[in-house]
Length: 358
Image 1 (cartoon, rainbow, N blue to C red):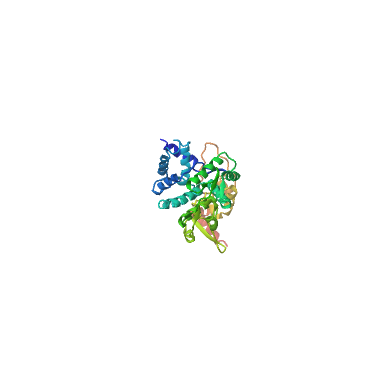
Image 2 (tube, rainbow, N blue to C red):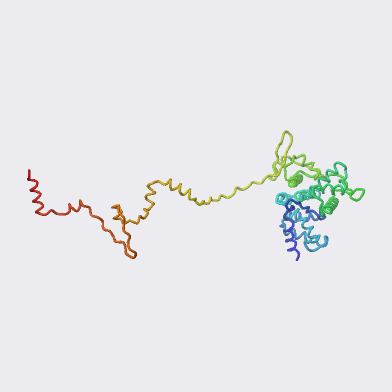
């Protein structure tokens, strides 16, 4: 009964982690490794994200309080869903590649895969892990109060920051990335780092690049503070063969890695619209028209004169209303008429007499 509810709730909360210029923390619930393993395992088994989501929803029943999307159970499912079911657009390729190897991976390798997906899904996770890694490298320990003060500078003093930071640090302790220190709020580095293979290291590198949204030198990625629990191993030839990463050589010994930009499709060809001719353009076109075409295509304007008067150059009298215009007979040629009339006998004799006169 509640599955339709939490699916609708997912559409409201999981589309974006940013709202305008205000970044959203998003990762504000405790997350256990077995929940991440269950989500990734269902995708690796061939389930669709919707079926895998329903499976995890039932898995959380009785473990996390609540039965509606607004409860702790629904919010926890939202956090898990953004990691594996509906990741950001830039992390879809990473999710698909991770789902293919997670079934054969060891427990430590699955932990590294989840870490890479968390980096790609939540910028808040990368910031917290980066500050923890820097503090452990300098002091060998990290204090929760000091960590929170540094996060306030980046994320602002919001009401959800302190509880979200505390829950995330406690989740890292449950994962084995941190250990409890001598007093409350103090945490230590793990006893040893987890060595990951080059294939898993490539996923970690890609997750950090998605979080940074820019290219970085390979040495900086391998020793990134946000990857403090791991000893990242990479294979440079394998990175060069990757379809999602691009490696450039800068200088003599620096390899620069960035995300591969997907090819863009050319825009569809659209026939240009016929623009309406302005009166000025029509005048110019008429001036360019040949005279012969203009004479053939243009009909003579009516002058109001009858054909007979027009030939004689006189004015035509206007016709009364209601009277039809008389039809004019063609004027006979004078020369043709004279030649057609036969001469009479008297006129013929007269002409002979005139010829005999001296």
